[in-house]
Amino acid sequence: MRSFAIATAAAMFVTSASAVDPRDFEADLNLPGFHFVPYPFDWQNDPNGPLYDPVHDKYHLFYQYQTPRLWGHAVSDDLVNWVQMPVALTTDQWYDQGGVFSGSGTVLDDEEQSVILTISSSDNTEIFVAIPADRSDPFLTEWVLPDSNPIYTTNARDPTEIMKTSDGRYRIADGTAEGTAMWECMDCETAADIISGGKWTQIGMYQTKPEGQGYWECPDTFPLLGEDAIEGTWVSKFSMSGDRYYLGTYNETSGEFAPYDLEDRMYDTNGAFYASKTFLDSKDDNRRVLWGWLISGKPEGSEWTGLQSAPRILEAAADGKSIKMVPIPELKSLRRDDEKAHYENLSGNGDDAKELEFTGRMFDVEAIIGGDGAGDKCGFRVLWDGADEHTDIEIPTGAKSIRMLVDSSVIELFADGAATTTFGTVTKAESVKFGLLGDCVFESIDAWGMNPYEYDASNVL
Image (tube, rainbow, N blue to C red; front, side, top):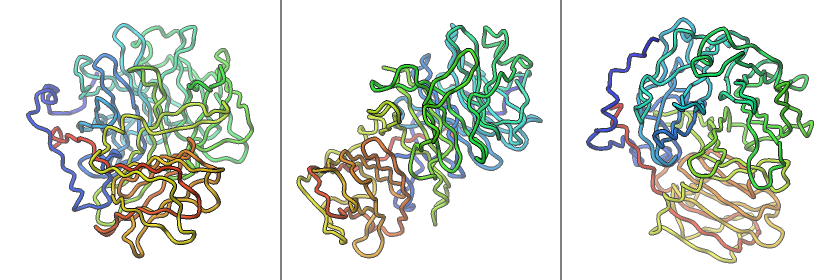
């Protein structure tokens, strides 16, 4: 095996004397405080290989980083606060010279609980893998590429996590111009078998795309969780003009997915929520956690481009035939009790915004709308300077239960479990006012100022 050239010893990350947070929120008013942005500041896009490592009780997030694309890496104990790690995957092999493109991470159920990253090349022809150089390192700092790479060649990209059938067969799905393809590792029983070349064969299509659609990128395939999930329901997700999904059934024998409906649905109403990736979080009770790339562009005066969504829990909606999502509850740990406001029975001023006393650039809102829910004109005004500069957030008609995360230049709204992401522009220090729009009646509004997450970038400084 050939190791990547990472000079810093793994022991450093255990013995680092003090955390260093390089973020300056006064110098960069657009910089989010509780949405992940890597350091050194640079380009960031697809989330890759998110996973929970039960051996060391840590979460890992990898992501597309810089140009040509590398895999950045961050580690967390709680999915809220982060330790920035050095780049995990760079370009030093013939098959990754154009960049290390998107993929996934898997923790196997073998005795060692082996960790494997599945990755695609920039030209959509090679699927390869990486494994930790030292499984005993709690931060999984250094990664190696086995000499058996690539594990298969194809006309596809963005491999999923490694799935295991009920009878022990290992599979990977990837995105193609025809839809989501399914591959199987023939006669594979161990991690060594999985990462060896020449054993993977395409067994068919997990789902063939409808005629006339574009390339299906960044597929994700998994059983749907939640108390309202219909037994046997699986998700077939792909990225194309936003993140889209079908619900249906999965035939393990053939490797084929059969959708319940002919039309796909969107994870987030904004197509700028893209290239998302989920992982099964087994730390406590099993839950499916979702990350998404927020295509925000480079804000004026900022050094960073793109950011990750707040982690979301994805599960079945009440009808069992669609998906709902909410921010992970751990984010509430960042709420400031000394910056909290509570309002009851408030409504807007029609076409004019009603200003509230609460102000902030980073805050969290929970609200309940009375009557039949939000009307045709109902919402919030945020990042408002009291004059011209503001961002308006529209609440979907009929929605009653609202959660809104405002984090400088990004706003995530969850209305009865449906998600909408909005990008605001913050150019003034005075852009902190909060107001109501429309005529709907809010039975209650609770708003908390938010602390930025704890961020230790000392490992890369």
